[in-house]
Image (cartoon, rainbow, N blue to C red):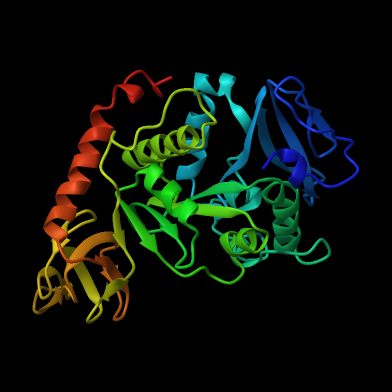
Length: 365
């Protein structure tokens, strides 16, 4: 669908054709075909009277096509997506974009500046959708982002990392009832693994879905870090999706890389006791049920307890903290029948990302 059908009435847009493509309007700003501009959507004013806005970078292609959003830092400390979007926006091929791209590298500006997951009132923005224009700060920000950005689009990619003191293997998540098209886009993204997981109430993904906007959720790396391989995987994945949607010039080829692994069940292995964790496995490694994943010992070395794998699969997440309490989540296993092949698959993708000439010169653009 075109951006016309997602834009609120009263904008005065006409029917789009290849010969005449109308303006894209957002936040009272009109952006002509073939132009790009950053639009500041007012959010609030701080106690010291400094205004806070939601910056949206709009690239409105000369030719018609899908309207897609990219978002990051919905959780303010999950900053890996900020660098991914920055690098994507440096791609010279965007000058020949078909359709419209709305890039929002920092959704939760407050959390980003405070290096915090939350808003100043400790609310989680990704549990506050669809929001309300008269609710809490989190509700108002959710309402603004949903109505000014998400509802104008037909598809989006929301970028996240693990929470603080954890690390995630690059992965894409879709819901169990995702459309065939969204599953195709997940395969086009090409992350090492695609997880089928339920949509959380109050999340951006849930609100977007209710509004008819399909969304891929990308999880990779750790909070407050720019991890190079997760960044590279995200940049390549987004560009691959844009090629698949025919928004970027050139033909998309599904033969360029192997299809992602797929899993629908994951489970955290938890600490059997409190103490000091020494992990023997990390993300991307295969495990069999009963494998010794690590030990939890006391500070004196008098006793230690084994941490054992609860099933056969691939480690897709882990804690980075050696200090643990009983019941703490230590390693997250995605269950699959052939974890050894899965580990080889992950290694192949990592090698491909490390050697990709696309990234050799600075950011690769």
